[in-house]
Length: 61
View 1: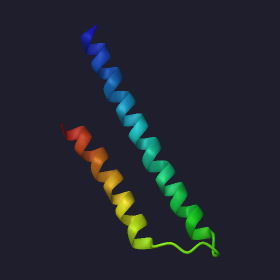
View 2 (view 1 turned 60 degrees about the vertical axis):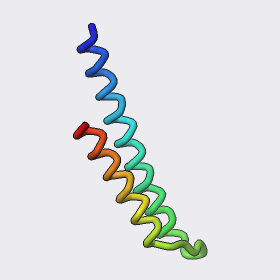
View 3 (view 1 turned 90 degrees about the horizontal axis):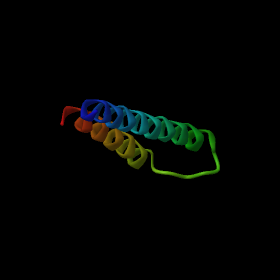
View 4 (view 1 turned 30 degrees about the vertical axis):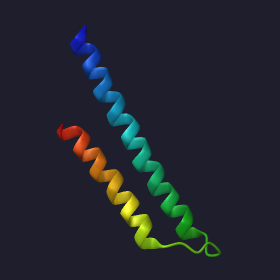
């Protein structure tokens, strides 16, 4: 039972993180499409890099 719960938690964390990264990329696409919206591309890339790093780190632990 504990192993099933552990697998479920790992799957949930993987799924949630994947969805978060996916929506971050969607947000980036939306911001790039909006020519009237001024934003800092470097900060956006830092956010995406942090999300990917967090995802990788959570799976190594």
